[in-house]
Length: 273
Image 1 (cartoon, rainbow, N blue to C red):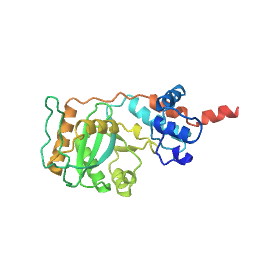
Image 2 (cartoon, one colour; image 1 turned 180 degrees about the vertical axis):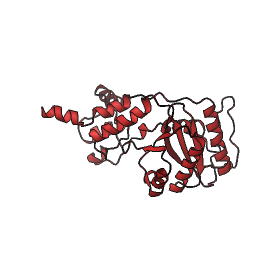
Image 3 (cartoon, rainbow, N blue to C red; image 1 turned 90 degrees about the vertical axis):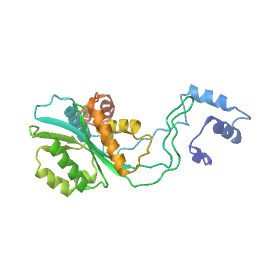
Image 4 (cartoon, one colour; image 1 turned 90 degrees about the horizontal axis):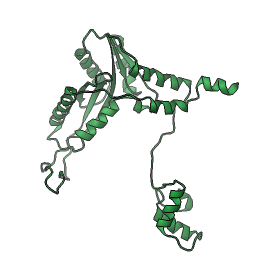
């Protein structure tokens, strides 16, 4: 990294590397294009950045078991009385009203959005995605606490027919999702069954894929009159989605890559032999 060479740079690029090679006396002169060709021959691109997270949860047999259980929940044939939902919250959604209306695209001109906007608070969208039909249930709230989560669960309880006696919900490990009030609510609503993927496995929660679609198609331009208008437009988007809802094709490839790195009991026994 540049800092180790006494340079205050985030990362190297071809031009900076050329300068460093000359400064260090390694070569008398060299061009950035030559450096780029050398790097290409070694399949190196130091100007690219990929974020990763060192796992805080061991990739052991318990981790592998949890991944398998969630994957099976997504892929097995459900009974007539079962449903599997993926639930999460998309937080801090701001209306950002603009002093000038957004102008539509014209010949040789893109959509134009006024740079200035006013702050008018934010909403939190609680959403649940049906893994088999693709249907989405969503509600907006001013805050994100156990109180609001229970309100959303009550909403789901009223929306989902009582003939569905097992409502499996996949959600992350936020303290709010495991709070005392929520757990007490679950005790009095036995048809709701929570499933928690391992920590830092948001890719296991299918509602995140739907949030990505929502962000790209509805929230890319934030220009709503106020929070009420934002909430109404979010509900309109959900209604339009549900009119032609579709499930996501769940693939085990990503899971397989993670599972391959797990130190399962089977691998441990194999090494011992």
